[in-house]
Length: 401
Ligand code: PMP
Image (tube, rainbow, N blue to C red):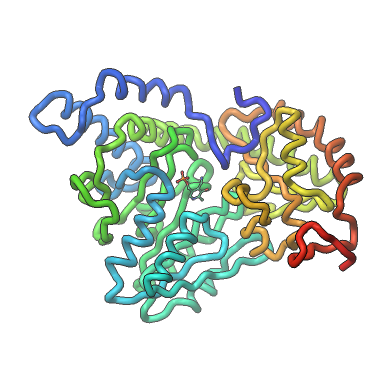
């Protein structure tokens, strides 16, 4: 079913064990957890709270610190806007980074329109945020630092422990979007000084449309969705019990199987990464070699456009991404890669491979069988040649540098 699928960062299949656990909560136990004094409501409430315990257990949180949302996007919005609105009388300055997901960048842009000030820290050539830059950016009116745990697109694992320590020492709240990291890096909020952490269900092979925000006990947020007062008033709306049950089991399985998943996937990823870098000329790794998510290989192939690579690989039954899936709607190259100093025309030729629980060596073999030939053919046809540069004013026309 997942043959040739190397794009787990964009979407993951749901673990069949999770699907099985969810089904009864749609057909038999479909009760509303807010209904009191009735067994169907009790059963739904119990399922909801068991799932909360499982998600909490996965991250070292207590169940009361987990608020379920419709996904990582909502959790990021809840954290950023929730803190901003709650603490605006204390200060209106927020620190983040240029490589965050759009579900962090866009709410921060919105907050800027409301009068907040955002310092968006740069990254180095491998995508790392420098903790010293965080320290230097903190001001008296800083209320929040938000840096993602790992950059899903290029695999960079950020020094979030250090950054959170710096925020804590300055009395500033720290939020991290753990979406891209949660399947590969054990995160224990009982030992890490994170105040807020975004989790997603699909990234650990649970259903889509579910996520959570970890909110450290005592951390106050303004609610964004008002209504029936579910989720301690922070997120009104009848709970998505089947989805949450699935998320809960996915989290428990992830906790049990993370080590085995990593041990299986990393050698496959290394074989693909090294095979392309050594076997195809003019290829460069994007992001760091170490301190990298074990499931990510992001490689740029000079003198090719990523979209034509994507299409050619798709015709061979191989699914990958070019740059960030979220910016694939536009023909602009990935802002993450541009922020790392990668040139416009080079970023266009990047391929992002992401492995997951059902990846096999056969997937890697499929790439090796076709990618050298595709690369050769596309380079022969390409408008990009050595010494040419991207002309932003006149897209599509390329001249000597
Ligand atoms: N944060 C990161 C790092 C992501 O990669 C994604 C997309 N998978 C999101 C947030 C948003 O997730 P969702 O679309 O499920 O809300």
